[in-house]
Length: 504
Ligand SMILES: Cc1ncc(COP(=O)(O)O)c(C=O)c1O
Image (cartoon, rainbow, N blue to C red):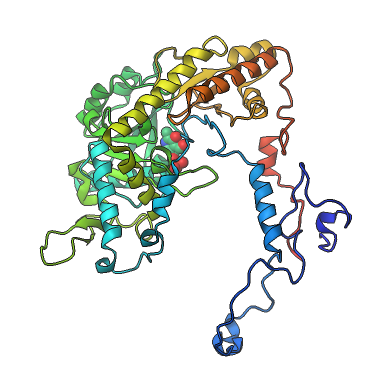
């Protein structure tokens, strides 16, 4: 156990901070220090015993770190300098859309009229909030070509589960109990997980040599036991499913529903709508496309929008426009055959407010530019790094491009993983590696629409230098210049070695 009088087990005179180490906040703690001061109220203090019954009182005081404001700010500032973030630079983590998020959206979410309202406040007092939610729902429906949406799901995967529960409700309402949901072999890992969680079996269909759904494999999988198909378009190889109309018709032909995984919507915003492609259910990752910084675990929002034949099953209660001329303009309603709640209150409300701000600030033309630039930037990177890495599906891509480091790996022993680690030393966040699973040594680069030409050049230069280091046999053991060096990722996750014991 650590002796707190000698922080972190260090000699009392040793510097507390350094490039390689930062003590925990508890190690900085000294009895009696505080970074706050409460004004006196003038009201006589009531003894704790009179306020809280015996059996609800703690036996001992809560063990909190006691630090001055100076030490507190220094600690967290130093920690923040050891992080990489979307505000710091390019973050080409394919499929995750880690883009810079405009600060105006944060400013809107921080407005007191939005962030200080209790979610349980009555509708009559929260007409502004309800208007915000209804306007967002309408905007998302317009962008996705759907009839109505729920804003409750807390993330993309939560949206997927909601969509599958809607499929089940739809099936049950028509007196059926279909068992299977089809997904392509390039799908994001959350898709099969959600299918299983939703109570269905996964049927996987192959991708063809163009990286798209193999139509013959799909036809073989279709029968009246299929509840639906989950697809993202552009798919997780960054390629547009050109046969989408035929795919949707085939699935509808056996009575199945089409589910659109909208995590990749920034590639098609304002260009084409999932509803027009034949999808019935769509989830939208607001934290990817619509300006909420994510990574590190949230918060997110994954609204689910549906076609007219599914609106009666949506989670409730939903914020809606009311048409009583004498009453409030907005209120709450639960759809007739609602699947129930999928989140407390209104979902992650401030993420929703940010998304509406993003849509309003951009307007229709601006959103179209988002998609155009996302696609342009990815194709620029694809063309520039062609030859440095292999491009397994070598044709124009959408918002992301999947390279393969397999040939480099065979030649030099350096894997996609090593390339990613090497890029950290160049001052960039690594791309996604080893996904999609159908590409060996995959390096999935999503530059996003927010990065400038100069940043793209710097990123491509950096990736070329990393490849050259691999050719020279100099990549193993990277990164060496970061606060945390190369870790064994499996062991780091499974065998935690705590260096500080917070118990006394
Ligand atoms: C294609 C795709 N689908 C679904 C998800 C899941 O979204 P979330 O992380 O918000 O649960 C992601 C996340 O990266 C994704 O890229």
